[in-house]
Amino acid sequence: MPLRTLSVSIIMTILSLTFTTQEVSAKQAMEVNWKNGLQFSTPDGEIKIAIGGRLQVDYGFFSEKDDLDVEQDGFEMRRARLGVSGVIGGNIEFKTEYDFAGAKVAFKDSWVGLKDAGFLGRLHIGHQKEPMGLETLTSSKYIRFLERSFTSALTPSRNTGILSSHALGEENQGTFSIGYFKDADGSANSQEEDQSSVTSRVTYLPLYEHDGKKLLHLGASFSARDTSAGSVTYDSDSLAHLGEDIVSATVAADRADLFGVEAAWVQGSFSLQGELVTSSIDDDTEASAWYVQGSYFVTGESRPYKKTAGTFSSIKPLNNYGDNGKGAIELAVRMQEIDLDEMSAGENAEALSIGVNWHLNPNVRVKFNIIDASPDEASEYGNDVTCYVMRFEINF
Image 1 (cartoon, rainbow, N blue to C red):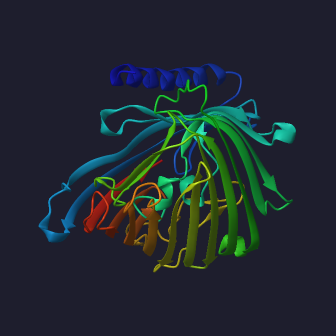
Image 2 (tube, rainbow, N blue to C red; image 1 turned 90 degrees about the vertical axis):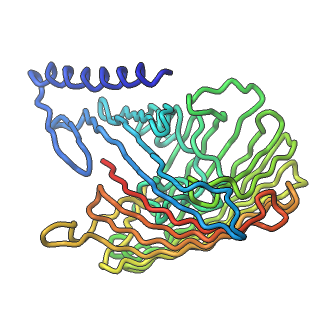
């Protein structure tokens, strides 16, 4: 869809919401408030509309071993999103979000659903994330580093399908999700007759105290996937999106089964998190990736946890940046490895990431990462690279 046409469409949608609000106001007043974003709602809560977006601007430069010059320094509009979400009639919910980064328009979350669909739990139909992986399911607004780890090369992200989600226990001590999906590109369309996947995730909180300031999260996920075009491809950059792929492998295959385990521990200002993901391709080829990360808030904050989703959410500084505060300052370190050697000899890599995050308020952050990535010398990339990347971001 042309950028100009889509932009006009979104503007008209927002204007129509405005006119609808004016028409309804004669019957029931609409309340407007700001809760980390612009929200409209009726007093009875039957209608809720939120307008949101995010802008992430990156600058990166690279230092390569042996003075090679594969990578290029520069700026990037990493994400530029605009979306609308809400509830209509109390039980019907929706979300539609577009990403304009790189002058290309792509669907992100774009679904409709029921908050309560009986034995099906919470039901979403449309373009959405498959339920696999703590890091993948945590929004890019709330992850500790600029980019997700090597495990994201194996785990599926957004595809089009139907998802059923359940909160477990009277106090939401766990979650269970299962969905059926078809691989889809940024248009959210799919017509691959022979391709499909079933993906499921379960999480549990054996420990949850002091409103989440002390918790232990455990989870596991599985995805059975028929392949698209008769092959499986995994690749990853140096964990700096501006960089080139440092590992890449493709094998002919009809099926891939993914299995993942995840754990996270929060103790006040300190948190520890890790995942392992494996892929069994046609039962005779294996690929894997893992990471372990830790973070610490110098200013005393704690990572908030969303029990109904089994993921982490937005940091709220104890004192926002301004006359009387300096925001939240977070230090983070992550080790990770990816092994595609059985798919293609030498295609494996390890990396160390160090991060400093400055949360000025719940909506604005500045992040700086240093990533030392070391692909195998036998890989096609075959060269160590150090990445220095800074991000300025705002979301609402």
